[in-house]
Image 1 (cartoon, rainbow, N blue to C red):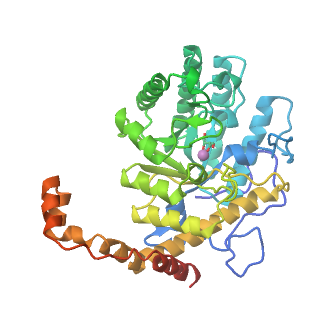
Image 2: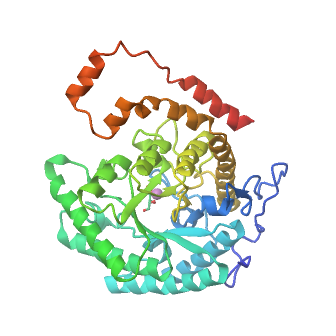
Image 3: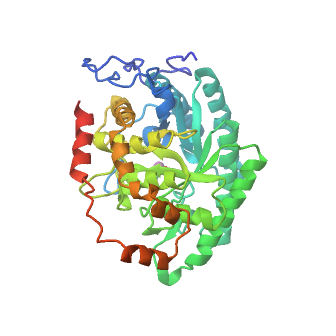
Length: 446
Ligand code: XUL
Ligand code: CO
């Protein structure tokens, strides 16, 4: 696959060269210290294992604005005499960025790519126009779409939700948008399609019929699934759990909530989960926990790789730099056989105070190196087998006759009582948390 360094008629990052692997000794911040795309680990290249994706919204749309002040970054692609001209410039900047960073995938919301028009038809035409340009850019660079999605949460019409809005006319608008976003995803060969709940939740129980809203959500998702399949989408639909922000209560609280929802409404054959690290921590879990819950249910689809702020717990969408998080996440993923058609999407933004254009590169390079290092460490832990053997040893009694009968569903509660009555008080078996944590440290630093 040959990649050109920049695409279109203007270079948006003139001071940024092609980012290459220079190794741990390099003091060039614009190089990879650990990510060697073609290095083989356990039979696959780093690129194949990690399947990195750049997200369009944080990297090319967000300018650092927060509820207390305007943006702090000026984007050279935000010039042009119309919204559509600016959108085309942004696309060129994005493909230059992807190419220079050497990531294989990207992700977008419909409205990141093209502006909303003054009617449904105009919005559809805007998106279709940018999609055909993106298709050309994909063909020229070899870039692939990890997933597409619809932003059905920013426009004021969605203030009470999209699929769960109490007003049917808003639900219909959300349907129009999701239809067009599915068309775009299929046109660009997207491997997955994401539904993040956005404002699918509520602020006040006194004015909300939650049972009706959950049914509506399932009906809407079923329609979207059927439409996607009817136009040839063979990829995976993904639900991205999040407990709050922007709503006070969101329906897709965490992995286990979404797994229960999908199973209840019979959607678990087509839908899997997109686990975002910072959403899991916002729900009071670790990201490894939510990943493990998804794996246990056979429903891990993809990952939004980022991290939160340990002090305030908010959804701060920082780049994933915490090595323990990255290793623990990859331990779960590798033990489950990998990401499949999912990937590691950097749903992450540079800080409001990081105002140089190169900071966009530095954030991604740091995240890619963190996950590349984590891949090497996690693979070493798994190949060594010590942790897995200890974990398995804790369940050894279930390989004994009574344990086997229990797992096979052959014992009753009365039988458990009789076994207990015939046995002495169980010996206490240490869980050895301190030892396993120290073992992890040994792998991290050896
Ligand atoms: C919001 C979030 C979204 C989804 C896509 O917290 O994570 O950007 O990833 O809609
Ligand atoms: Co996300």
